[in-house]
Length: 63
Image (cartoon, rainbow, N blue to C red; front, side):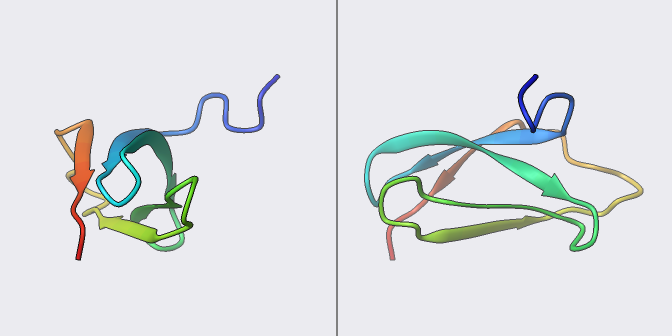
């Protein structure tokens, strides 16, 4: 069984490297956190734990 099976996630397209991946919910930070799989650029999507988040796909723009 995969280590992230059953965990909440969102899809992120990283424009920096043109790749798509999932980032997973970290309840301690009340956010979805992850990194670009190629350049390791971090991304963090803050979430209100009482209301959650409706969107499932996001785009991490280049700086």
